Amino acid sequence: MLYCRCLAFLLVLAMTCVNELPGRDTRDASDDQGVKKSHDSHDMIMNCAKACSDCQRACDMCSNHCLTLVTEGKTQHAKTVQMCNDCADVCAASAQIVARHGPLMNSICTACADACNQCAKVCEEHKEDPHMKQCAEQCRLCEKACRTMTGQATQPGR
Image 1: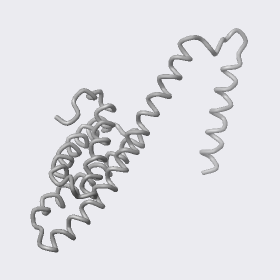
Image 2 (image 1 turned 180 degrees about the horizontal axis):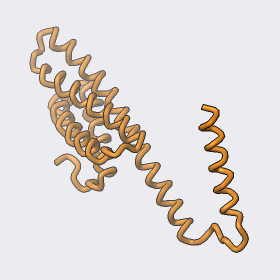
Image 3 (image 1 turned 30 degrees about the vertical axis):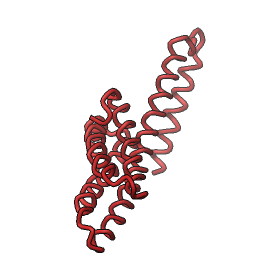
């Protein structure tokens, strides 16, 4: 552990020294543009991860609510329990992979957007129920964030 910290310190020190060499202008117009793009990309990634995490929780709560309804004899909610469980699992995986900038980020975001779209459709069949309405809303927000992340922002609700 100490070795890693020393190595990291030396790397930072070396990079600082290189940037301070005479005649080297470390700021130019393209750097400003690159920093802005990097910041925008980071914000988009973090927004997507948060939307996925929020949706996962909403789906878990909706699933629990619908399970209660099923045990009360309202069997039409059985499909929603399954859909919300699956969607919550996909959203949880997506939140984790996106937050760590994993190499499967686009793949999981595409799958998450599709899962959220399907889950929202099922929950929207019961708009009078506040839990299901909230779940559908979170699914739509997550779908939009994932489609934005993958560059498919023009395809929500397909």
